[in-house]
Image 1: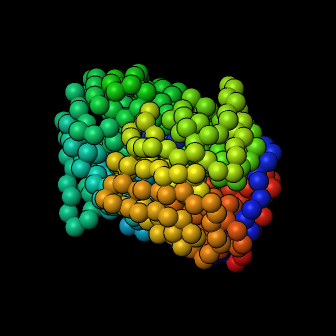
Image 2 (image 1 turned 45 degrees about the vertical axis):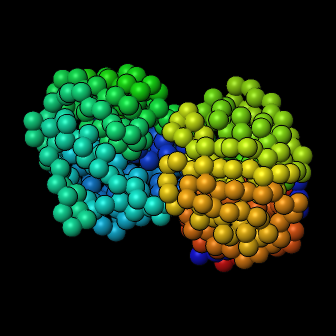
Length: 417
């Protein structure tokens, strides 16, 4: 374990690149189970959740190897269909193995997943969707068991455009008989990336990125080579870091179309942006403008994963801002830590009222979840004096070279074991 020590007050200037997307690589790694062969996944960041996914694959009987940012998975040796409680509890996205393992092995057994404590995140949408294509799912004492029944396609409607449920349904339906039509599907770029990977494996899927996805089942899938998309939330984090310090930064290897809602919010806050095909340059003043109302929404709306980052930025705005969190009910935990640093934030149910202050002060604070922890680091970059952030294992779940990238941009930031 280590703490992050930050001496604030430095403008971030320079350029850096964005690594592969955590929320894309995790379902893609789960999907490798479907292949009767070897898959090569490029652009895999070194994250705790990726390491956990590889351990799950190995526990199922796959052979895995990492060389730099490339991970090779040989799924021809899959022999088990049960995932231990210890592995399931380490991350939320472990539930995406349910559809893939059941489709490959005919059955699966696993406990309910873990991950950041952001309030209730039931898997009922996953289970309801899988049952509609003939997978028998039972829940007993925190354990989920699945087995193939009359495994055939049909029309499936999601009550909410859940990313995880969409991914689970896609990975299961690629192996069932007939055509599956999924409506009210999640539209996130990571869904498109999963579709592209599955199609390289021999699947027949279209419609990802819209609210209707069509999947024609195939009898078998082969291994494939694929490079994951850039991480849009890491890009949002770095842009907010530049904005909160009044900096001038250039991001490379970024897909600007994936973060249009974030870019629009940053413009509203007064940042100047120059957007090209795979680069974004941000310049900002020391006092951002307030934002009247910023509401988190499913993609392509403003992402809940970037809410804490904007909260940190708006805490030093020249006026009052309001953020409404519509996705997770417990996603304002970072606000109390920001207030310890001098922010003036009041939370009322799903609303955060942020009265901007001229300056923040360094303090000892603890990260309670992934993006909230990153927001505390951003606040530390702006604060006067030293900020010490503990609970950094949460931050490691989503960022590969976070501290090194901040250092390259001029931040005075270091790890202390």
